[in-house]
Length: 250
Image 1 (cartoon, one colour):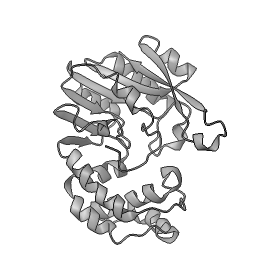
Image 2: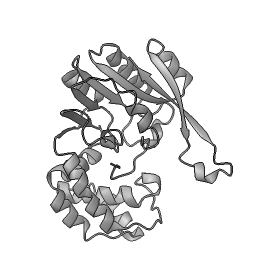
Image 3: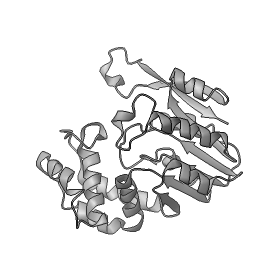
Image 4: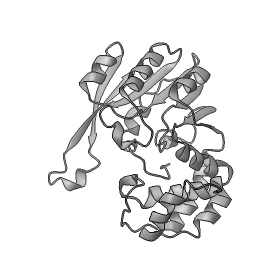
């Protein structure tokens, strides 16, 4: 199934390459940097125990409201329109005191769906069928019904869920592009992540941009290069512009 939102660094174009590298056997699946969860949604269920985590509390609140309060969230969204005026209002309303989690989730959802490139900053001026978007949340609710949803720093999450039978998929902010993400991720965090993965009991699959510093940092692991079409491929006359990414595994 498809994700219900867009997000910076989403893996819609790469998830087949990621999933085909999954080991034959594992008993728990953890998405450490969940984002829009394209890889999680690639199957009806990977294993019995699945964990979605993200450090962005607005994103996690949205996922939790879809899972636990879908009818109420749909009702809140039914009063909302795709308009620049409302978009500007929602940017401020998401963070005012007294707003409920459902109200906050609905406004954040509309910011994602109606912004340019899902950046939640600038109005996208794109026609959206809000009725279809709202209805699809019922399918997402079913998919998330048994998924554990967390809002932790990656280090804390790994300490809790790492087991010999675990598979962790990690899609951190790409090195050199951190400024485009809401959650701050510094060079020290890339190094801290590397340290955690060197101690891992289970298996991991890690996606990164093709970057020399990242290649050196993960030189002790297996690194594969994959090419995908650029998200902006439609702007290129020859339709063949490729973007190189790394898939790193232990």
